Length: 95
Image (cartoon, rainbow, N blue to C red; front, side, top):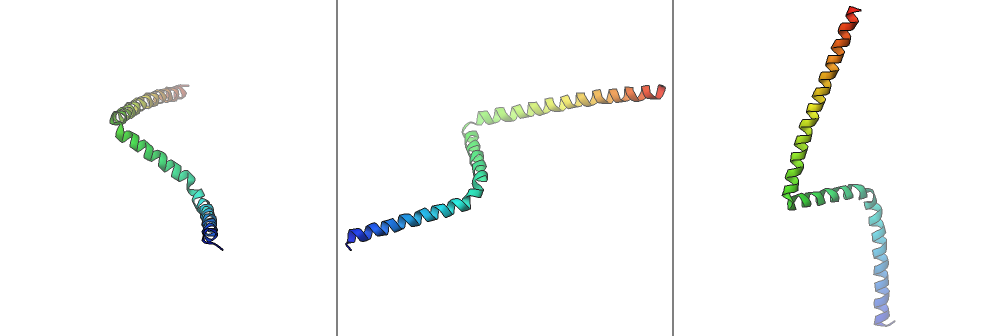
């Protein structure tokens, strides 16, 4: 057997070993696919926000305004429900 044939067989053996290791790694990492994708998306979002601080500030401002409006809407709804409840309760007592 020549040196070239020996190197070729060694190369083929290493390639087969790499394929086996890749298959084993894919089997073990397969369950972590979804968490890794989520972490990758979060990391991409963080990189974007660091490079675009104005977008971050606008997002925070929009959230604050939306929460305040949401609280105001829920407060108004609660007041309407309370008034209706009191009206119904007072009418029931007079009947």
